[in-house]
Amino acid sequence: MNEHQIDLAHTVALGSIDDEDHHDVQELLDSEDPVLRAAFSQEVRDTNEALSLLAAATAATPSPSLRARLLAAIAAEQPPVAS
Image (cartoon, rainbow, N blue to C red; front, side, top):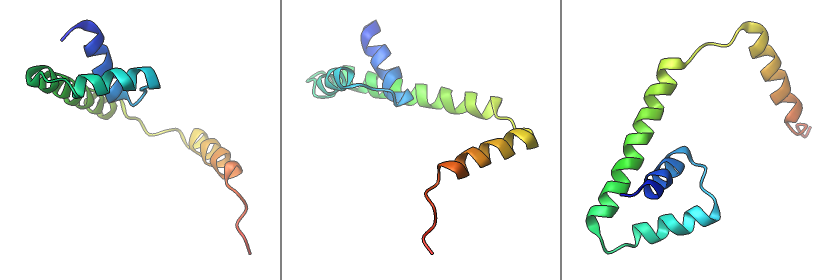
């Protein structure tokens, strides 16, 4: 895989793909090269696993005040409940 294809795999794993990248990914997945397709899929899986491990290793419980502010902000975004 070349550097652009590796970057595409990371973009897919991050879920931040745009239309142009989507087209490139589709071309890659439609490729007749099974080794390239397999390498791309493995890079996406490896990146997802690394991101999951990082998230688990850095997870922290928010302070009570931050949690309250976040919940209040979320509640303010909710549409009113019909009676």
